[in-house]
Length: 541
Image (cartoon, rainbow, N blue to C red; front, side, top):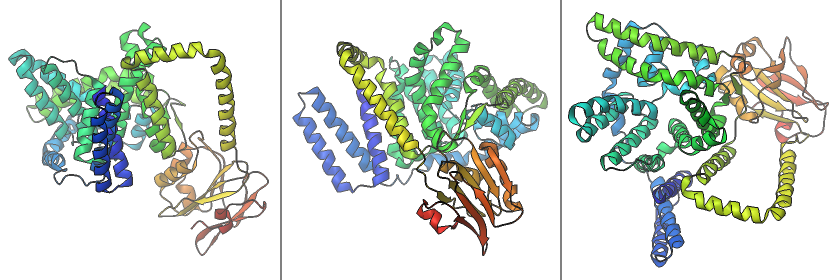
């Protein structure tokens, strides 16, 4: 637990260094003071621990404020050199399998979406199975187990570790050496080294050391979205899955049913801060989809690897490998379409702000850590104290809950003003209007980017909002780009203007006039004295 805590403090320091860029002398001074405090408190466990954590945070901030090492792209260069091998493997798979089975098998094996169409990608996201196209720890374990099993049979467990780790490293490089794959490879390597010394690998310790090694080499890797999702998912499996298993009594279900459901729930919960702040979509069918999808994944992975190799050999052998790969891949395609196409398979949300996402992540992390076995005695002490003071704590908790609810309602209540916010598109123009009663109106002029428009709208919606009250297209080009936005956030009223200026009701007896002057979108409030400065300007620029 001490190693995990020190790694966490160092990683927190690296993040602080990345965001604030403090001066090196001040950081070195802070680290020196922490070391002195550690030495002075060497006879006290708490003081020594706090001093070590302060020193780790100061050194982490020093590393975070410094540039990455000059050779930070070494792995990327080696992976790039393997590009022809990767391309040949993908070509062998596509030569023997139809679409979408070919791109799905290649994506499961080497990562990436290949030639999958937009509809299939949407079903992947809606079913919660989009991670199948990323290189994660599960695939690394499958590769290590397959190679390690053969190596152990021929050369024994000790020498068999060498080809097993070599296969993990080679697979990481061949798949592109993405940060999430590097994290998984480091964890598998640390687990293998622990088994060689006769120790049981602790996943939390391995995760902390692996991420700290990566961040020490290149601090900027902590900002990588793939690594953030991979880290969140792993923490969910380690910290939240045991709690959910007990709380939901999943242990009474057959293992083949309870584990996929519980693990999927744990991963979804742990990834919520990233999901809500980036993707604006939460799958509701993911736990059930994983029950059918996860047993197929090893067969698709190993079958794709076999076809990638056999495709360069005799056609008869390649055809046999293709059939063995086609069957599980086709079933997986059916699972993705079946769950992704269900009505209500996923819910679209607004975008969670970065501070709110950080608070949610910290709350989930604290909840998971609090239930670690190492803190059992502390939990028992807390339960005993709470039982003794229940007569006092109950009214205090009620008052606190009421105050919290009052503050939340006050913050969430519409402020009674008109807000007009330009969306800042490089092509076309759009404004997002929130009326005095909280009604939402999207106004578009010109041929904006459909995907970018939907993303900008998500940034202006609260996380619990999943529809728009009105959408107004001021010309035919604007109407043509509304598809992705309306698919994600259905509108109660769609208006395609036949002429401008146009008057639109935005709630609370407030009306605005929509027009264009010299090709610029203009919004003019017609009634209500309460407007924001943005509304008074009345322009989309």
